[in-house]
Image (tube, rainbow, N blue to C red):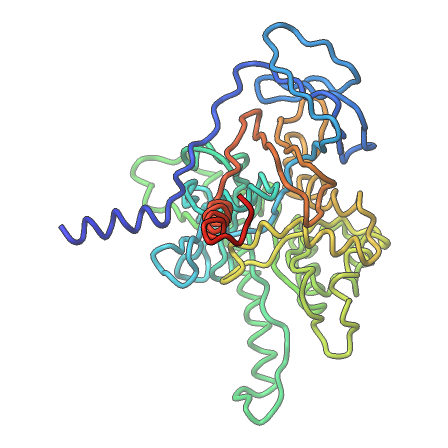
Length: 439
């Protein structure tokens, strides 16, 4: 009996009690708003009409039919939902509690791991993130050399099937550390360290060879029930990325890592995106030459080297934009940052303070992220035919003081309450009763 009570209490602490939005049944017309289309100009005093979860008209003075719900949003801002391209949202609840971590598998090669099947739509972190305008997130596994396949998830839904917008997004590969360490406390010689690095890269070469040989073998002979034991799930899961050239996201930060990853990708004719990319500003010409996008993590951080200017991470997006690198922003992953996805617009705004224009900063967390994730036909901008996934705010997007008033995901109005708002109201009432706040 005690165990049952413990399970119930644990579930109540770790699960959100919010009810997902209902499917849009009637057309909705928002009149007189300031539309941040992202793909074009900011449209002031325009109307936006959406039905069955899709945007169907953006004009001035749209005439509404009797079955249309009409809302006046004069002086309010309509903004495409922010997109978090690298997160563990829904895969972890409390970083220090092992039972709530579902983003890692044992072993080095986990290419058959799918993030969406482990996604928890009842996570308490989702409402907090959604309240700040982040309506779409790419959930990413992290363990091993090849950690698995990421999935684009909507921040609303009863089950992981409901929440999945796209799967797979990409295969994730953690590139070997290329640094050579010196000093009296280093146990391995320089030669041994270099050999270890080369061995790690050779193992990746062998893996590519094995995938192509496996694909050739299964293509040559028709499978039968008696041959099922010959199936290799890890190799089979990599076929779309190696043979069909679907995206591979390579996690790398240093110059040597990025250069090595680009050479490796060119050698095997693979389509890659650099994730992390803190040194990407140093070799932007290489990235442009090979048409490699960057998902830039942690703008709000300190420089990688002591001699770099303290503002270098803030200025990196501006340098990438100047040099023609296609990029978007992501927040840092791992404990204790898993719950900080809500700060994504704030990081974009910091970059805007160091050279990047506000429009480019907004694009980097909406349309640019959608393009890199391959979902720009559905989300990322306010365009006809795209999903009605956007929010209404009382102020300019990305401002610290901006409040999200309403949010829609595929036309479904979603609940914007969260634990932080509940605590805010609770303690306001406490100080009212103490006479320290006006009633």
